[in-house]
Length: 365
Image (cartoon, rainbow, N blue to C red):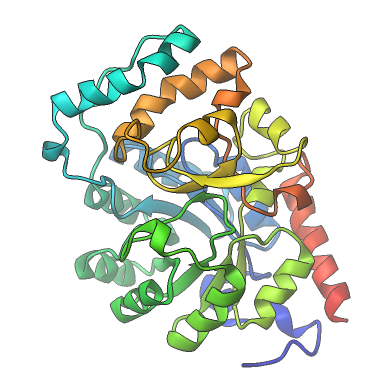
C-alpha cells in the first residue's frame, strides 16, 4: 500500500483515473428529494464527483433527471439506485397486513390530526426498469446499493462505457461486488448517515466501523475502494486515504451545504443541539442512521408498529410532512451521520470542496 508521503500524490489514485476526477472526493447520493442538480453540478465543477439519489423516481423520472444532469453538468456525474426495492414480495404483504400496520400507527396519526395514507400501488418500480432508463439515458456513472445487479445489467454498462460503483458494508459484500466485476466499491462504515445498505445478512448483523472496514476491503478486492462513513473533515479524509482508500465519499457535510435539497427544518437540526444520531427502522422499515428524536426513542427497531420497506416509508411519509408543518420536530427523522457535529451547515458546496482539498494539502505537506 503506498504511503501518503507527499501532498501531490493523494490526488492521483485509481479512482480519479477511473472517473476522470481532479480530486478523489465523491458526494454521497441522497434519495427522497435530498439530492439536487445544483449540488451535483457544484461538486463536479469543483473537481469531485457530484451524485444524485434517484431510487424514489419512476423510469420516466430517471430519464428526465439524467437528461437534466447532462444539460447542467460539464463533466461526470453519478446516479444512484437501489437493487432491492422491497423487503418482502409485494404479493406477500396483503391488504390485511397494510390495514393492520395502519391500525398500529393510528395514535400517531391522531396526535398529528392527519388521515392515514392509502396503500401505494405499485409500491415501487423494479430496479431493472429504473436501471434500463438510466443506462439508456447514458449516465456517466451508475452507483447502486442493496445488492449486486444482474450480469446483463453490468455488461450493458460496460458496453456503454458507464462506470459502475457498488456499495458494501461488510467484507463479504465487497468480495461479492468485486467478483461480479463492478468498477469500484464503496466501503461504508456504520458511522454513515442514512440507510445501512446490507444485502448478504441483516443490517443489524453487518455493523462494521469505517476504520476496520476500509483496510479489510482494500486487502480483499481488486477494484478501487472508496471510503465512506463518518468522513466530514480533511483529517478524516487523510485517515481514510492512509487506510488504502482510493477516494472518500462524503455525505452529511454535503447534505448540510447550501445547494442540497434538505428542508429548512432539516438544515436547522444539523446546526443546533447535540446532534446525536441513532440507527432506526422507524422512518422507512430499513435500518438507517438519523438524528435522535422522540419518535426514534419510542418506536424501537423490532417494534411491531414497523412494517417492511417500502410500506413503512409510505406509512410515515404523511407523518414527516405533518411534523414539519406543525413544528413537531420530535416526530421527524432527519438523516445524518455520526460526524454531524463537525459540519458547518449552509456552506457553498464548491467552497467546501476547495477548503477540504486545501486542508488535506496542508496536512500532508
